[in-house]
Image 1: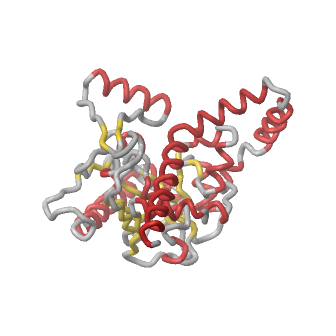
Image 2: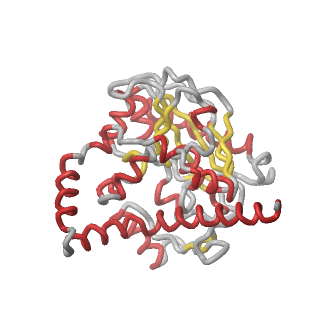
Length: 326
């Protein structure tokens, strides 16, 4: 019976991860296809009504969204967590009477650690950090996709746009933790097993926003994130890399060529440990100076590097591993 249950559990984990990967890759496109298809069937009134609703509801994602605890607690996310497994590690308290910007690194291919820890309840964020409400900020364009926007809002995701950040950090009370994958698409192109590269040196917008609203900065590192897929990395300056960069500049995300362990898209069963560092106290400045931005940006990079080196061995890396900040 134990063996049967184990096999059943492995099956549930595999199916859960497969639906997550396919949703990441194709659900947005499928929603576009569905809404267009309905327009040419007897169900066309549904499309019309939805478009009316979409116009009326257009600003909701930038006003805190519409999260649903039931969706964040779906059992499927527990199976997704157990597949790798994914673990959330706390190193310091987060005061629920403050607001935070959590910079999450690295992006990896699909940001499995960030999604599981901050967009679901599977890793127990609300128990580990009582009174703090996480909101994972992603591409604003995804919230313009019919139906898909409703799904991602229900998980507590929000657009990584100025109006959205302003609302969460100044109009939603205290205890808000906005999670931003700082490196974004550029960092995903550097994702590969054995690579510890983060793109943050020239990215200072999140620091400026933290100063404008007095939100403390918190570095987060997901050890194992880059080990989940093998990626074909093209050399800088090559035609294929230039095409990737062009696509990224137009669409906002990068077309990565990657392969997983099974059926090409299933990631490797590698543990992912998302370590949340200590908050960096940030004063509130209505109009922060460049010197202030540079100062807190430097403090952030130093704290990120310290977090990486303090936890790399306990999270499966050797002492020789270094963090490359570009």
